[in-house]
Length: 176
Image (cartoon, rainbow, N blue to C red; front, side, top):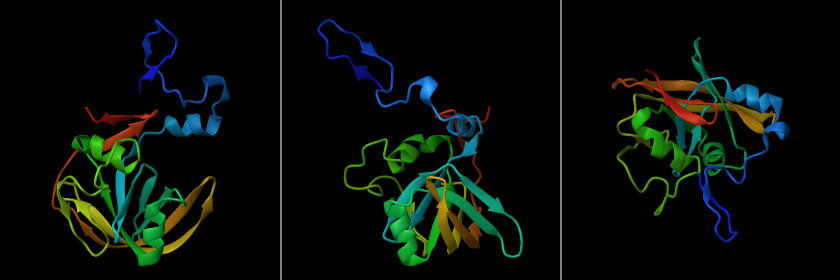
């Protein structure tokens, strides 16, 4: 992000004007930043969507999915109303898509206005995603500053292969 210093003769600086100064950052947030996380897109009928990097799949009978999302997001309102949602792992070509659904990149015409989408009963998924899971909402509760969502995985589509997009220390990374 670029910050323009309004003083005459000032230069452009490569700093985030909203960043918390290093000495004031939460140790827990700093620890979380040092844990590489997969970047996923959660969508629901409506449609609504949100980029989520705190997603965990628990194998079992039945298979389950857990995630932390923003309780005030449009996605949560849509998930709560529909009782179901889709989760798609994103890959390196999806950086701009991830930023758009995280609210960091403009989305004229709406979040779903660009790109190719596959409609599912759980919500739209990117047509080029390396698979997706259709989930039924089981429970949700406040957990820290987020909402812990627990769901049952009802269907999985893994028809495509693809490398993951990872989030680490505030930036996207690829496996190399």
